[in-house]
Length: 378
Image (cartoon, rainbow, N blue to C red; front, side):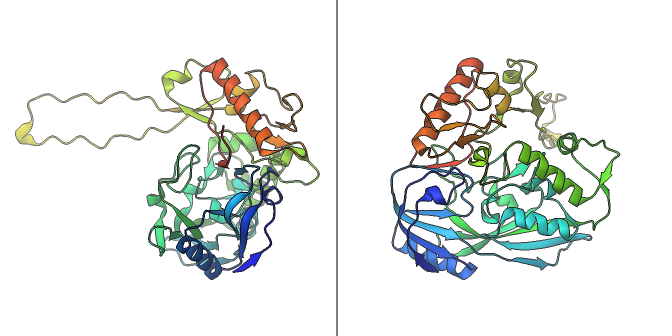
């Protein structure tokens, strides 16, 4: 662990906004990260952990605390109890897309559709990252978590993280703190060892995105390159020469609504029914059976609807800007709020509030931000 001269967070976040912290530490190993956080918590300092800075909207005022740059790297292959499976333990500061490239080269299936997502591995479970129908919840085994309350490193199984749609117990949602506070030290994934042969692609959403049928077979490398090209067309692969990529990715979550609310939206709005969790089998003790069985409640699955479609059909087209603002919607993807050059966090937040207002006025739905907001109000 070493103390470095504080830099503006605008230089360390993909939205390119944010004030300068009072203090900055850089942790390049697992041990340094643990030491840095233990010291900060002992001193009761405000703190902010920064990996790739790709899911943060940080305010313009100076941050009165310590920012910790997580730069630990490393991929270790460990045994799996399951045949034809491989486990990888990856340090928190390892670049996510570098990990995906490693798995594709090694012929390991499970995260190839998440190629091109910016950020670090330690941040991935916090919001259960995903793309094209593939999510980290499908391959995550456990995380090493340095727990703020106990000060101890604990192995936390994936099932205890309550991974949902872009959420977990570790994520601080807008207006609400994380239900469990700590810092991820490493992540363990279990992937299928399929080699370099062509294979069928599971998942309708991914096949549709790739233009494949259920019978088509392709390699992991082909999937990765096609996903990267698709994301690049949408401005979702970081590129210093392209202001459309100066964003936090999708700024608003695709909304999950009830089936009844979804029916109030125009038929043209893209939607994806979520899987219904079936109730457990009802068991009635013989001595209490009176000849009647209460019929199960008929439940329709919740529906995920396209936030990008709602934004565009609320009258906000790609490239939209408020007057005199340096923040705007991406010219390639209406769901990305971008810094067109020199924008402040206040300008980004103003645009976000306007988008929320227009969508709520048109469709009665309040879009929720996906990035973590620090020192910023919507």
